[in-house]
Image 1 (tube, rainbow, N blue to C red):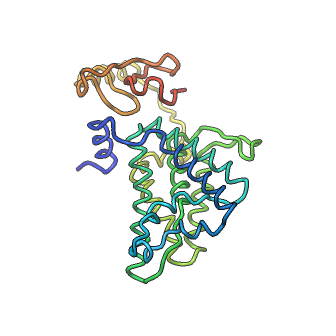
Image 2 (image 1 turned 120 degrees about the vertical axis):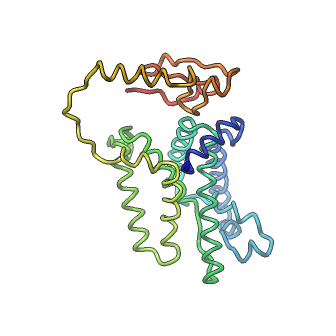
Image 3 (image 1 turned 60 degrees about the horizontal axis):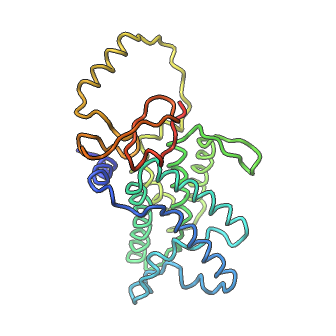
Length: 276
């Protein structure tokens, strides 16, 4: 039985036009606009909050407006806007537009379902925001690019996997220190991460260098055997489409990537370059 991630990948391969291109650009622009409007009139934020009772009375815009509530009312919010835009756009390049669109809105839908579940069980309205959705997105980025370095506080170079451990500690702290039912929102966000990046969790753990000697003849034979069993000649390293599935699609190799990596026409100029 295929896991959810494989089904999503298969769906996106069969529907290459699915998704919202540059989704994080629109999300960040909306956050910035509402940050400015909230600074002018703070009461506006009350009309954006997730409230199941008011949604059921017809205020359906609250189903999505909570995603656009800025993470902070201070000037530092714009640093967060840039950081999340960079992470989101990079994930879109890595996964493709379709998969990233599914990833982001899966997090939104899971959060909404949790809000309604708590409302129907307890009668309480959970204060929802996009904070944990964005933090989950950062966790996925760190799982895919664990050794990428960023300048913490614009000064200190830190690898993403270490920042991810801090992120995980923040999630756990929120679970144990935030009152119920808000304390389970990080758990909901982690569910979305596990669907897409559960297999990459090993990248966040320290890896022991192998001391075994590689048998190059055996490895070469294994590679030739695997190549001979393939039903395709070219496969895109981003979206996974092959010339067997899409015979009219053009495939090329990137000269800027280390090694030989093939990309379809949609991703030859829109991908993260391989460095090792």
